[in-house]
Length: 252
Image (cartoon, rainbow, N blue to C red; front, side, top):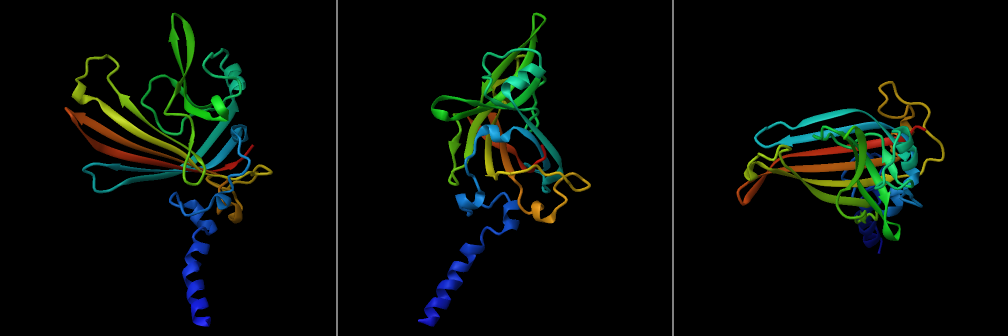
């Protein structure tokens, strides 16, 4: 009996330690339970405010033996849709006032215009993800919300995630069809933990809290994964992959 009990405890040990605080800093912590992720009573308005931390970027190009990796300071500022439009001095019929807009981008865009990430409420209490863009036409600055993918779904951790494709074509319309490229995107929230108060003290480089204890548990972890493919006739081959991991704490 004692031998069986010892063997059972030995087998269960990896399951109970799979989500140590340090593992939350890793993007592949998919063995964590919903409770460990602390995704409780989440609303999109909970994102409103300024978040600070770091963004890790990993890029892998075809034909290049060494992967490019960077880690730098990140700051995201989420604002309500009506406040965002007031700041831009205009109106946007496709952007509801109760939406949440990021005053910036999750990943670098090739667009020449002004773009901002946005979450827009849709039917049945779900949320659509996309970008708000501004362009000038006839002397006026027009606003448009472009939805990416379907409404926010749920991944196996019961967290919102969205996947979509974006086909890049030449703006002048003169490029050959075979030269077109397509990008596959995946945007997901790996973790969101409610902070009862904002983090006041950050480290000297601003990439995390001064408190070592807080550093081990980012309040918000976001992941963006992108695959670029190039078409050649009826074939397409991937040319590069890129991943962004945001680890953030509520600063305001």
